[in-house]
Amino acid sequence: MSQAEAGAEKAAAPRGLRWLAGRVWLGAQIVWQAIVHLVNDGGLTYAGHIAFMTLFSSFPFLIFLTALAGEIGQTEAAREFITMLLGALPNEVSEAIRPAVVEVMSTRRTGLMTISILAALWATSSGIEALREALNKAYGVEETRPIWLLRLQSLAFTIIFSIGIIVVILVLVVGPVLWSYIQPLLDVPWEWGWFYEALRYFVAVALLYILVALLYRWLPSRHLPRREILPGAAVTVVLWVALASLFSLYLQNLGRFSVTYGSLGGIVITLMFFYISALIFIFGAEINSARRRAEAARLRAERAAERDAHAG
Image: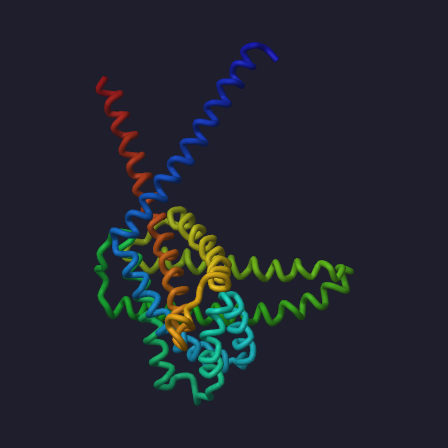
């Protein structure tokens, strides 16, 4: 290697480190700005509203989902899917709401389009409206669309989301059957059973990521490009998965809500979990907004530098 090449390598290394340090510093600034705006934009208050609306709309949504699944003969599959969803929550949260979920799903209803189903659709769409309000605040935009259009969009989201869940239900029902055929054909060792479970977990996380990204893109008054919403959606999913684990550990070792709230401890735990989940959801949107502001500031600085260079 010549001396010139060696010198070039030595010069490249510091430049690479400076670039990496610059990206880390920029990321830290974005996170800090997101936290500041989360507080200043009333994110703590919006999270409480979303937590209440989530609890308020969850059971009506289950009514609509089971009725819709029943219309296509997939009631049992819907129950299995909801059981799997409860298993993804911290044990203390799932155990608190499981009796009510079982009662709601066990009640027979006649027909899909009943008054209770319409009420369930309205309550669920109200939960989506709470998310929309928080996202508009995070993105710093005012809602200009008429309320009837927003309600129709929320109802459409509810129906599309329900249909998507049913599709996932069918995949989860067919999945074990396909695996039982594939395993002997490919002579897959039984020890590889973890691979199938890991694949199901990956699919669940991927679907959560897609759902969050869709909400970030279509609910607010301003529709950001896909590349601007994906980082915040990734942050939301990662933090939520970590929350589901850490919150359970906290309750097992430190949380003693029954001492303070008695028989209402389970409801308080559930609301707290929904509250922190809502904070994470809003924080992901604030990450997207902070990245957008940082990119706009960088472009303004580059244009200013170009003007100064031409003026000089």
